[in-house]
Amino acid sequence: MCRNIRTLYNFDPPATEQEVRAAAEQYVRKISGFNKPSHTNEEAFMRAIEAVADASMRLLTELRTSAPPRDREVEAAKARARAAERFAA
Image (cartoon, rainbow, N blue to C red; front, top):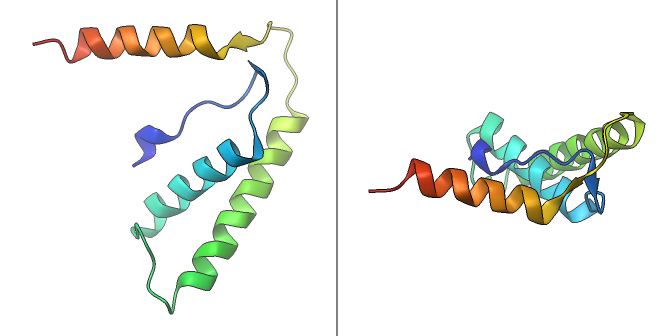
């Protein structure tokens, strides 16, 4: 599951709220062991996602770097090339 969490910092354009929430959901799923919580645990699960997303968004807005922002398309192409090399038969 956590392989789906991607670096969200220092990209142009910046990470969206949806991307941050998706990463938070993956994190909560991983640490809880639930892909989909039971009805009894759903409220706690959703609160945890919101808390992690809020903390993540706050972190992303407070971090500073002198490095130029990375291009999403270039990074995606690099990742595809690594995957092709890694999974080549």
